[in-house]
Amino acid sequence: MGLTVAVLVAANLAVHHWTGLFGPVTAVVVSALLLAVLFGAGGTLADAGLAPGTRARGARWALALIGLVAVVYLAGALLPATRTLFEDRRYAGMTGGELLLLLVPVGTVLVEEIAFRGVLYGLVCRERGAAWATAVSSLLFGLWHVLPSLHLATAKPALNTVFGDSAAGAALAVLATVLFTAAVGVLFCELRRRSGSLLAPMGLHWAVNALGYLAGFLLR
Image 1 (tube, rainbow, N blue to C red):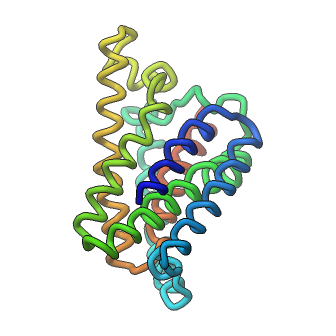
Image 2 (image 1 turned 30 degrees about the horizontal axis):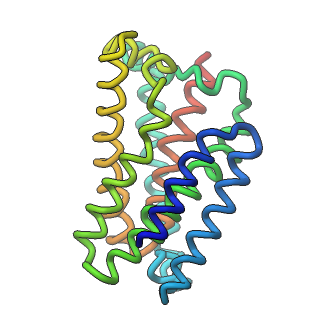
């Protein structure tokens, strides 16, 4: 597991340092490298949640979760009280296609799900069981988001009103992001466990991120 964590630390720095096409390319390379680490440790596609026999079930879970998120986001976008939650300045210069088809599915969902609910979860689960796998994976998933949360309060006006522009506010925003994403990681791990497939958390992860960005893009 130590090698996996080392790869994740290097990947975290690379993915959040490089912009444009380099980000998704790095994500693909890191995903392949992590799977190689898993296979090198004697793991299988089943350990990564990618066994052929589980894909149909995982796809059904994914489609149902995407539909649920779409309904919730549509309601949120239509209500004036929640519409401002979708504002995000980080992607102002990008097109909806780039967000939906490249940045989110490859640069975010692929690498994070392969890393945390695939390889890391699979390696720990083999040794210590699902509870430990969920705890370790979710904690590291929360820490993974330290770098992208450094300027989150500035990028999202709705959060800026809560945390403000001070250094203390920025620190609180980072802490809140780590705790929140760790909790989300627990949910994603449970989806992986119950469905038996990595496709279920992948579907929810894509829907939460991509449809949220799309709503913000359309509401500009």
